[in-house]
Picture 1 (cartoon, helix red, strand yellow):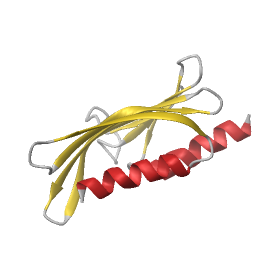
Picture 2: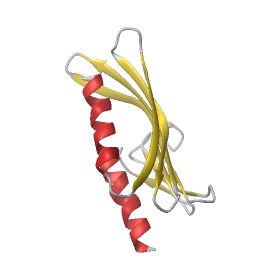
Picture 3: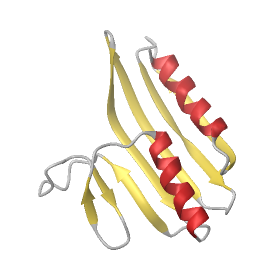
Picture 4: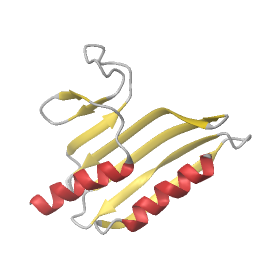
Length: 126
């Protein structure tokens, strides 16, 4: 299941028409039941998505224990970040939340495809 998760991430990135390049590293645990995926996706407008996801396999299920999906413009300014750091207890979706330059928003963890669609709308909208 872990390997399929990683393969799906890679396929999603490869299928995106807005991706210019990517550098995704995969660090599998010794038992093959955990993986830490980190890296960058660079888009056609030179904006960057930094990815950090830690996944554990339990039987027939996957648990995404930690994630950080940080999107920046071509000057390094944050446009948004999804993460599950447990520090916004006022939100009903805690620990899941989204940072924007203006505020913190309640959310659930989006799929990579959802994030690529969000980034596509930003790029095309400009």
